[in-house]
Image 1 (cartoon, rainbow, N blue to C red):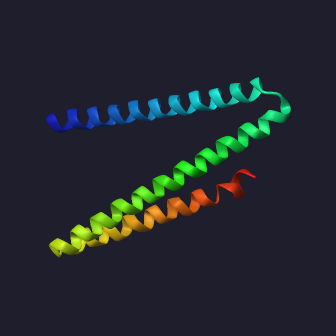
Image 2: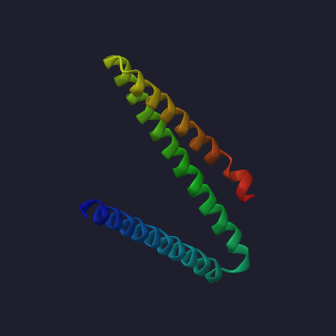
Image 3: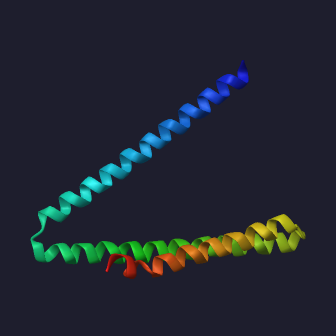
Length: 111
């Protein structure tokens, strides 16, 4: 009986978070559309470029932070001679590098 309640609660929490994330994404989309229509036609390109530059800057920084965390994980794994932690650290470094590389290419996506 207890396991069934845990499954139901876990599923309902997952559905709640999924609905909440969808609502946040829709709100952000509406705000972006409303702000774009508030400007004149010439300023829409400037707004779009500003948003693209903002995304590029912060996602690149996020990738750097993820790489830093991976480096710390790898170093701690090396210190304690834990192969699994070393592997996770290297995987985290690679994931951060991928995020930073994709952020660097936002100029190609938004141009």
